[in-house]
Length: 199
Length: 199
Image (cartoon, rainbow over all chains, first blue to last red; front, side):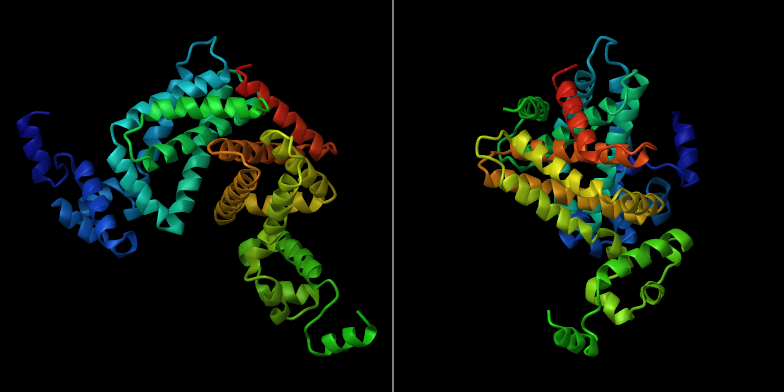
C-alpha cells in the first residue's frame, strides 16, 4: 500500500497499523490483570491506543477476541486435509492437519497458555470452547467426506482427531519444560491407536 | 410404604405417584406442541396435574427436565466401567459401559427421539448437550484412572468412547427402521478401530 493510501485511510479512521494484534494483546493483558468479567471494550481500546469503533470493526465483543482464531484454525485443518495425497488413509489426513496446526501454534505457546488460563476461569468461556471444538470436528468430518470417506468413518476419524489434538494441547500448555506440540500430537495419536487396538 | 403413610405424605403435599415421570411427559408434550421457549413451568405443572411447587422439588427449571437423565447415565457408565473384569483392556471396559447404556436407552427410543428434536432446535440446548457429553467423557476417564489406566490413555479411551456413543446414538434416532442401539455401538466401535488402524 502506498504512503498516500495509508495516509488517506488513517485520515478516514479506517486503518491502523496492526490494529487487530494490538487489540488482542491489550485484551489479554487486561483479562489477566483484572479478570475477563471486569474488563470493558472501552478499556481494551484505550490500552491499545485505539477507539472503541476500531475495536468493533474487528470483534463483535470482548469474548470474540479469544475465539477469533478458531476460524483460522478451522480453515487450516480443512485445507490440509483437502491437500493430503489421494492415497492417504483418513486418519493420516487428519494426523497431517493436526501436526501442521500444532507447528503453527508451537510459535505462540505463551499466548496460548494465557488464553487457556482465561478460558479455564470462566464457565461461559469453557462452554464456548466446547462449541468451537465441536465445530472443528464437524468441519474436519466434512473435509473427509469431500475426499470420499463415508459415514460414520468420517465423523469418527474427525472426533478422534479432535480428542487427540485437545489432549496433546493440554499436555503442551501444562508441562513446565518447553515441549514440542507436533511431537505430543504424534504421541497422543499413537496412544489412541494402542488404546483402540485393545492394549 | 403403607396406605396410611402415603395418605400422610399426600396430605403434606410431599408425595405424588410418579410425579417425576408425569412432569417429564407433560414437559415433552408441551415442548413439541408449543416449542421449548413458549412453554412455562406453570403450564408443565398444570398439564401434569401437579403444582409448580411440586415441579421445583424435582427440577431447577424447565431445561433440567431434558437433562436430568444425564446424571443417571453418568453413574451407569462409571459403575459399569468399575465392575469390568480386572483383565479387561480399557477400551473393552468402555465398550461394556456404552453397550449397557445402549441397552437401557433401547427401551425408550420414542422419548429419546423427541428429546433430541427439542434439543436440535435450540442453540442453548445444543450447548448444554455438549457440556453434558464433556462431563460424561471426564467421568469415564476418572473411572478408568481408578482402574489404574494412566493418562493420556484414560482420557483418549473415554473421549473416543463418547464419540462412538454419540455417533451410534445419532444413527439410531435418525434411521426409520427400528435399529438396535447396542448393535450400532458395536459397529461404530469397530469402525473406529478400523479408522485408527489406518484403514
